[in-house]
Length: 320
Ligand code: TXA
Ligand code: MG
Image (cartoon, rainbow, N blue to C red; front, side, top):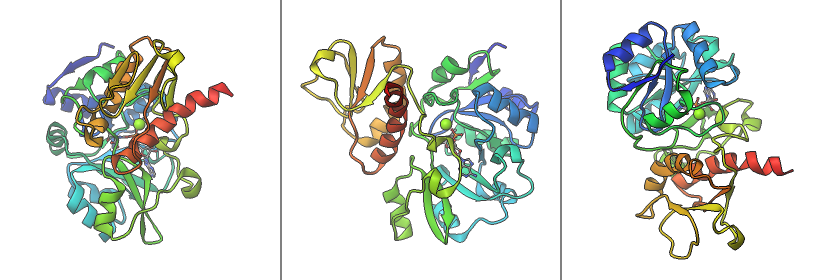
């Protein structure tokens, strides 16, 4: 199968309506989309990504009105957060209705709903009038894509079409939240920060890990979001000056040998937008190791540290 890249919205619609897969631009990362009401199409997502079917998918809608039939309860506090943050990088885990296939939820009774902000995807979702099931458009466990070229690099010949909406504005996956004992909890850090949520809620929503919540999400799997080149958090030592790449948050005068800077302005926002693209680039440089400077553990820094720790876990476990 040849994979085409382009901006043809009508072609994307036609393919999706025929049960084919299309990679879609979102404001976070590129998704790998299928008609959520077509079970064969959903199964082909898992096949193309080589992802275990136990790992549930997010449903994407243009707006809340489209989404309500797919849940039995969208709580008032979520309505308030939706009104403030959506469309945008926030995903709501709620009880599923009978319209949602068990293939989407991995057999769980809850479903994840998201309302992406990318204008091209908004147009697509309005025209389609049904949800798109879409994980990130990477092979399972690998780096998430933030450009159409990144998607092509991993999924070439596995899918017919990549709808090119330019580089992703946020560059980090959506924040996933749920409700436990009347309290909002975070399942995955992402584009909407803990601080932004706390500001609206009046309390700091706790992070719930897989063990605590009993829910499987790929973002909670220990080895994930990984580069091919061994990646570590920290700074390269002098003896690795030439063989290892250093990635830093902002410009640094003292780094010797090859290095890449995530944000010329030294801001977390710009660094988040460039993180995956920089890691993709780092992977093509033929370095023996990649070292990434840890981020301040606030705001978007939390989500970035989380992704890097999972990428690095793959390599530190191999050492043992
Ligand atoms: O920004 C994003 O969220 C991107 C774009 C494409 O929308 N999507 C994305 O999808 O990151 P994916 O499949 O790579 O990650 C979705 C996460 C997974 O960790 C999945 O397990 C979790 O959402 N998830 C899905 N349904 C869930 C549920 N019912 N309860 C808890 N977590 C759920
Ligand atoms: Mg993913």
